[in-house]
Image 1 (tube, one colour):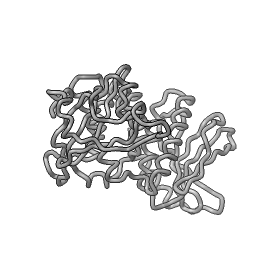
Image 2 (image 1 turned 30 degrees about the vertical axis):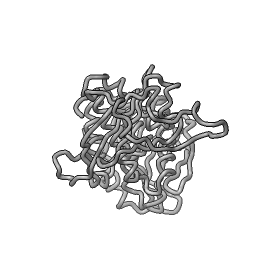
Image 3 (image 1 turned 90 degrees about the vertical axis):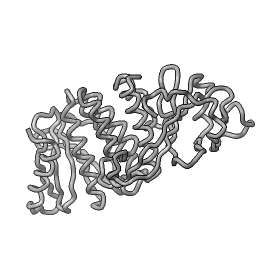
Image 4 (image 1 turned 135 degrees about the horizontal axis):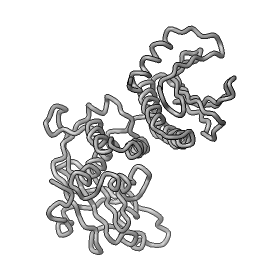
Length: 328
């Protein structure tokens, strides 16, 4: 069976030789057994799109952004076609990656309702992705921060602290949580800083709030830039691939991981291979009553939020030894 990626590229090649009149479009099927048929398509303006055929009109939102748009139409056979079309050709690489991944994941759903539910979630994520960045890609600082979160996710799994499903469920950073990892009775916040620095930035009053989480840890990754061929080099793509291998045994779990990565703003792109870092050291600190930080209860009435720095030179007594999540 051909991969979704090869089917997409084969369909795209077929479409490149088709001449269309005004108002026309052409579809080439890119799956083989999905409950919701997916297509690679092109319109008369040469714009590429992904389409899904459903038996009933779904409530998937129709969108119009500077990057892509979408619409729903009824076919002569009374089925419905939901189309996602690329508007800005400069984003073709990111758009095609999103299309291939989405088609692949829809093909693993067991029912049309499940496929439509997945589509609704993904479209919201696509909209958020392109709203956050003109090219759909993460900035350097965002890449490094995400590497730090993913590295802890991998440590939680490989150290045996948590099974993959529990570790992934705890990872809430992509969904805007104040802490990156949230458990039933505790939380972990991660920070990734250059190895010659001794301060971490705290972005709001809730991030180190022990009123909310009496058991709260701060994990600090110290890194330095390295060449891509360095044996200790970590790139965002390589780290993502390692984590994918932890979830491939369960298609639902893998889909949840991919959803979280998209929510974090990640789409596989070759440019992410060029930014390589090595994590030199990892420390975990117990954020207890005397830990230097600000909380909502500490600030005067009328102060609604604050960003501040914590000096790690004053936190040695709070360090957890040995590092609790594998090698540091």
